[in-house]
Image (cartoon, rainbow, N blue to C red; front, side, top):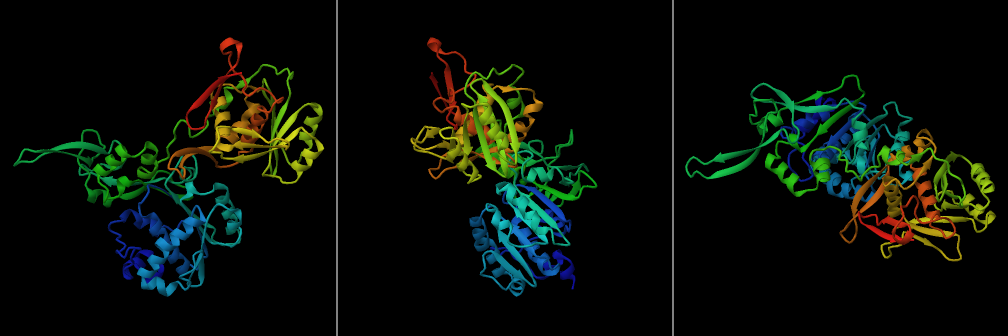
Length: 525
């Protein structure tokens, strides 16, 4: 049957409906036609929000499972998202379509659907255990940028036994070279080209493709201001109609790239007017407008650490080692350490064992160390006993009731730290050129690479306020090792609270510390 060979034929012959019971209108979603038909092993969609992509991929996943006999893993960021997706979309679409009711036997199972002889597993991404449970022929990753990036990588191992090894990713982006944008940059970068009456073909972009026009009513003389889509060709500026936007075509930018990529901004959705685009621009944040309307990454100055902000601290001066050494250690698979003193940071090291750390403790007999308390659970605790009074275990928390960034626990070799504020403090001190790094830029390239793997997201708290949280997109161990070192510098006898500070009033040092929310506090010591 044709519908077994063509998903388009299947949608049309079975009058497939969306979760709301409306016909899945291929004329309306013409830009989805080629995406639905695309049988590339690797597909990515760099998209705006609410573009209909999840519905299309849900239908496509079920058709592929049934007609290609492929087991599929379909991921969403969290298990709560999986439950919402199952109840709000999957089960409702099945209920609206008799053909899917025939195919799907386990309609009430949240985490999996049996489609014909295949299974679609729905999984979250915030536990590695979720990625280790089942095998797959095709992994579909929905909302890539909101997902745990390291666990997404783990899901790729579920494809190893398959003859297919297909992967599809789609999401509205967040930051440049992160998540879906990183995949998009490796793709053939297809853009939706529309044709103006003048004959010029182009893809729509903001702000060039939108202009403000004034219209005058012939009878009343009343003037109306309206925004319209226009041709970008110089000296043309004719209106691009909804029909012209609807009937465009995909044009790839790069040939011979194995990832089939599609950029889907709201600009190409024929039901979205130019006035609506402008309204989004005026009423939403710039980040929202870029990510969820234009489907483009947005980079605010404070969302990523820049290389120069780290490297400007590198100095060829010599550390004279005349103050106590503090060592910060991040643990897990191996250890990563940063060592320094009141003058600045003079050493970093990564290894699979603790030999070098213990050597440093012998070289600097008065050194103290702050360890990650939540990585390796055994060895650091053994070292606490071995080096009595010299090692503290550091716990990250988020203390909303106190302005204290660091809290040393009396009579315990433990310290608690406000994670995000402390990371922000260290970054701010790098930006202010207050953390000398002794050596050369080559010596500190590894530290920069770990900073390049973190990014900030402003998230809404339960109280409805915004707070900045730092997330990772790869190895960030040396960032945390430096944070632990910085914590150690606040320990009485461990060094002064801030390094590289300029002289303040009455000969005291001026201390400027970040509160992590864009505000700072100043005091003198």
